[in-house]
Length: 304
Ligand SMILES: [Zn+2]
Ligand SMILES: [Zn+2]
Image (tube, rainbow, N blue to C red; front, side, top):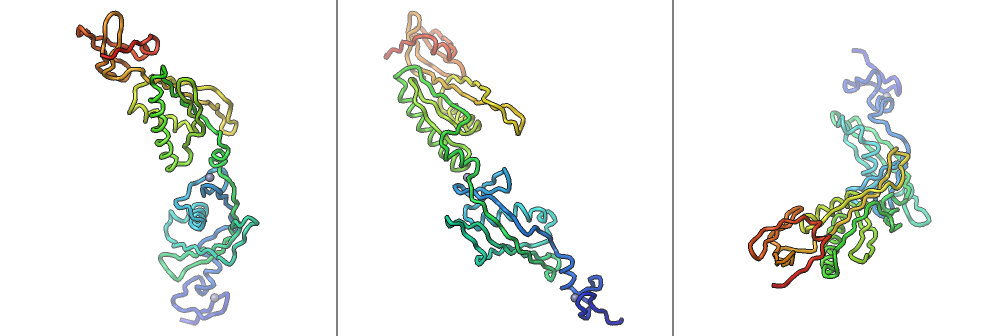
């Protein structure tokens, strides 16, 4: 076999260089293992560390800046290569390239992206990416800082002053519940509380939070629930109407074992179901009433 030489650099080719008349080094220069843009610009939320390329914000797995950067590069640039799963990528953040803003925020840096072909470790490629970081507030944190953002309202109500302790108890529980949820997902929070004569209004950041709270309360309390929705505008981008949802929760003014005077005798509350109250009279007669009865009628409670 006659000697063969690299068409580009003239190096003598060996058996390990069957790359269309080129040596491996020159072949890889002509046919890089992967191609990526030279620049990437991402937004990072000042408050929560979420990142985005355009409108959609993603919560990072870890809130540390370098891991946010690596996660964003994975998501925005390397994801298409994941499917083939034939390249191992390593990212090196070049600390000498750091440029800081006047507020000491890292605004620009270089990241070295090295990819190695899994089937032949000699085949690799190095790419230098210039990364720009825009430090802004994500939608959610903008609303949070604004403080008055809400899209749903829960109205907690009791029938009279006697039940004010109940409102306090429920409020404490709902607050703890919502704080817990907020830890898991910053979308959900109570943005405002407003005292009313017979209860309190909760202003909520999401409709889901409203449903979660209703479900949570249903597992512990008996109440009448009335949902309403009001048209408040239109989302022209998504082409749909925007509604503000409201849920009125009226806590039942009686509980099991209460004694109530109805007609001409005393009844005690034997049981409460999802929408009925089972009463037992002094002469053992059974009486079944809807929840609404106890809101519409004046209830005379007796202590036996
Ligand atoms: Zn060559
Ligand atoms: Zn944020």
